[in-house]
Amino acid sequence: MGKSFSELLITMPQIKISKIIRSKRKSLALAISSDATLIVRAPMKTSLEYIEKIVAQKSDWIARKMREIQRWPKAIEKKFIAGEEFSYLGEKYQLEITESLKIKLNKNSDCKELFFPKVFLWRAKERMFGWYKKQALQEISSRAETIAQKLNLNYQSIKISSAKTNWGSCGPKNSLNFNWRLIMAPESVIEYVIIHELTHILEKNHSRKFWNKVEAVMPEYKKRRKWLRENGKMLVL
Image (cartoon, rainbow, N blue to C red; front, top):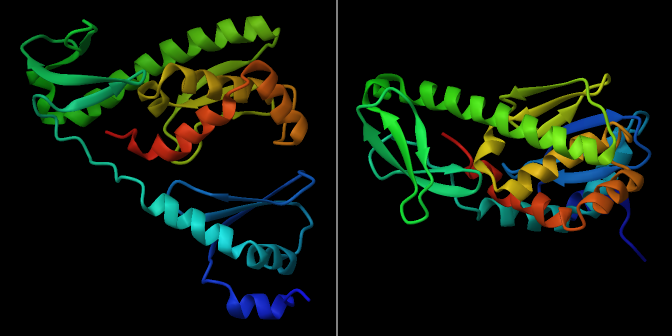
């Protein structure tokens, strides 16, 4: 016989639910975030007792996933010194401090460099953030327009956000939001997030029907999603 709910609570590892997100979804889903915390997505009327029961039943899986994420490399905040590496569209660029007045890239295949003005060093992070955000708007808007045309979908607008957890979102009026940090990710990953949010124009939840539509456009979407899950927290300034 299987263990009772009370027995499961006694024997399960100490699993804390970080957040419960209720929506019109039909089933309950467990997700481990990039900071190794548990997020539960549940239908509106799901009881806390039922949620805790499912968490108890899945405690071994949850604990294993949390340990995996805790072993991931930690992000190191940038110091803005010559030779330091910065990511752009999945490529690594070495920082070169210059006398110029513009942040710009040297995409030479032999030596990829990011030229950063010496006069910006006193507020380097702020300047680099502004540059990344501008590049993200240009790159993501262009790619979203192309993909939307191919899929015959219309969106209201595109904005670049500084969200801490979401890579993208689709509003009720089909306004799209994308995290500026995506500009550091590989192009295929950016396109996955764009396809993900565009698909929400048709399906407002994460049902099987939603994922089938994503897969029809990008058959290898799971690899892109996994890359974000494992590397997303490294995309920092």
